[in-house]
Image (tube, rainbow, N blue to C red; front, side):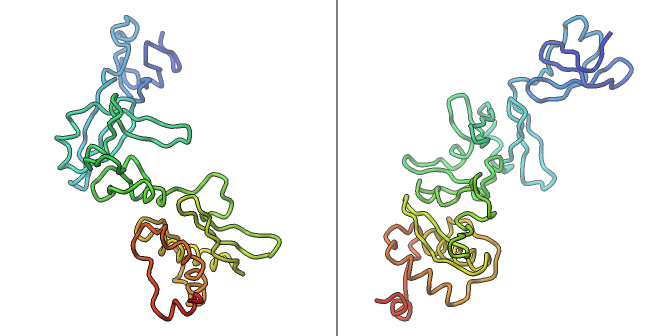
Amino acid sequence: MIAPGMKFGKLTVLEKAGNRAWKCICECGNVSFPNESHLLSGHTKSCGSCGKNSYEDCDDGKSVAVTTTNGVVFFIDKADEPLVRQYKWHCCTDANGIKTIATSKRQTVHDLLLNTPKGMEGDHIDLNRLNNRRSNLRIVTHQQNQCNQPLQRNNTSGVSGVSYYPPRRKFRARIKACQHDIHLGYYSSFKEAVQARNVGMEFMFGEYGRYNDVPDAPAWIRKTVEGKCRRFADLSVCRAFSFSESRLEVAGE
């Protein structure tokens, strides 16, 4: 007799799926519906797709969903399918839970698609490493790549670089560039501190920074942040760090 929970090779029985079929999940993550007699006889011990990649066109007609050998789905442009099919893809997960799609020789799918030059890095703009469509990929330096980072686990405000500072009863805004902490000031409201953070990102990281959805900073916040960032202008990675004459006057030049 077969019952849910029983194991047959790599397959774990989930539930009855028909007259003689059972719904099973494989160790690779794929679901299959083997015949009862094949399970009992030992003829079927896996989903039959272990170690293989599968490809399925997406509804948009432009993308393809690719399933890795361990059952994780990632996305590429339809035009890149012939290139990607030349390799066998597996999903690797690091200690921080970050997933990367790669071959057994550690060739990542994003570096393959970008043909990333030596000394440069491939960056996922939306931070989703399963989204390997061309519109989400770009070639960057290591420093530029470090600008585009997710929220740290120990963050309590919900915004990177913004925290409440009890001694002053205000919110503090900061950014980091090349391991240098740049203090952007203390602000009466959380929104003001987030606006200051956005302005600092604009000058130091430009298009490579991650911005928060708040109204544009008022002139006084922009002037404050510009003055604090100016001494770190040589660390800017976006070539957008420039001051007009009026701004230089505000900065005390």
